[in-house]
Amino acid sequence: MTKLLALLMALLLTACANISETNVKSDPPPEVSAMPVQTAPAPVHFTVETGVWEDAASAEDGTPLAEYTFTLPMLSVCREDGTAVETAETETEQKALETAAVFNEKFGKWANAEEFGEIVEGAAEHLEMCREWEMDWVGPYTLDLDCSVYQTEQMVSVSGVYYSFTGGAHPNTYLLGWNFDLDTGEFFDAKALSDGTALQDHVTEELLRQAHCRASEEDMVPEEMFWEDYESIIADWSSYAVSFDESGMSVAFSPYELAAYAAGAQEFTLSYEGLVPHLNQRGQQVLGLAE
Image (tube, rainbow, N blue to C red; front, top):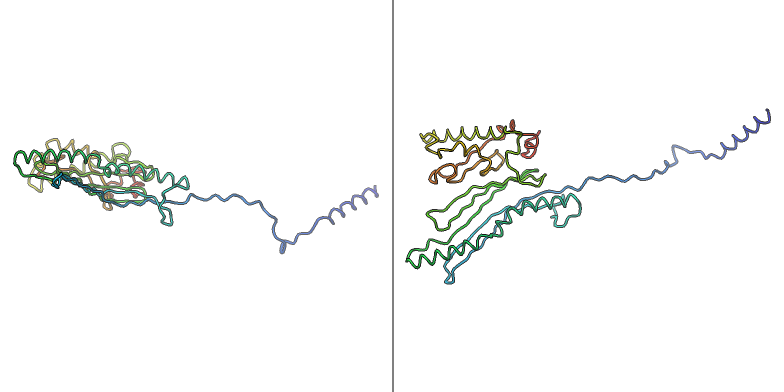
């Protein structure tokens, strides 16, 4: 038994002697395998600028037939350092380029001026008729679109005024509005910013109130200042020109839409303060009103 204990003690002392001592104050820590670092996608930014597209056409003798000038918004993508993204290097950039393409396609139809050829043909026929009947030429036919842009981190809102003269008794003016969600990459109807009919009902009530005040200021009842069915027209407000800016939401009706041409366009504004209680969470985020 004594010999067995002695043998065990010898083996234990030998093992301890073979273990190298580590000085925790001076020796480097043991190496650890490097773990992959997860980096967030490089941010991109959207920028909206306006550009001008214009053209004109004349008859063989030089008489101006038609002309157009379109001021249109263009959405572009840039990296954090300000360089433009033309070819995507990441999934984030690819998604941003696709978003910009959807936006620009909407206004690309205006830039292409696809209907201008028909306008020129109509003007040429009108000019020929005027000469045949010895009438004064009223041309040139004129088309004009002017757009203004309001942009937040999540939305682009465009309000437009389209002017058209094609030889009638007077030119026509149309008020237009487009609203684009930069997060989803889609144009949206203002009613989608609310759950149920909360926003729809609030805006309708406010527009009717403002319409009544406007008629009263002219010593008229609403049915005299506006069309007899003005209430149903106003209730369909989101189908007309809706846009946003720093002060709130604008709902605009072109001449003839809510009242006679002589009454002009009818534009109403609503403050964000009044809209907030009727917006859902997504609506507040899109409009930059979420706390």
